[in-house]
Length: 142
Image 1 (tube, rainbow, N blue to C red):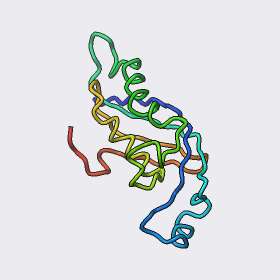
Image 2 (image 1 turned 30 degrees about the vertical axis):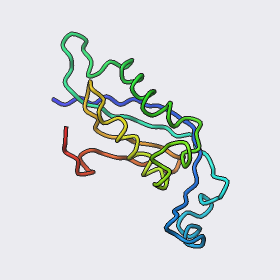
Image 3 (image 1 turned 135 degrees about the horizontal axis):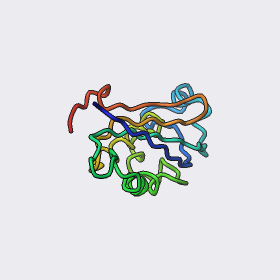
């Protein structure tokens, strides 16, 4: 039997979608108003899914306080109320699309010691959400 724990977190951040490999016109065509030189912000909702055996002593897959502390340290402290392009080192060289934000969050959380990280789902707006899944990404490690 496989059990999965889902936990939601929120952070606010701004970004500019702009690729230095593209011309100004190509950036505008690719990203539209999201290429605004002054950036724009979102209130992101991130859902973390972890799985593992139920500990017979605690009855839990993972202690929520441990998971919350880990997510706070690895993601929220680094991302909340930041300009992603300049304040998060990974996005100095990579366009901070929400797809890439999801991948970076997964990378930061995949070593959570108490359970196996299965997927990250991130909601950018009420219309857009993205999911990064360990199995669908081709990463079968751990």
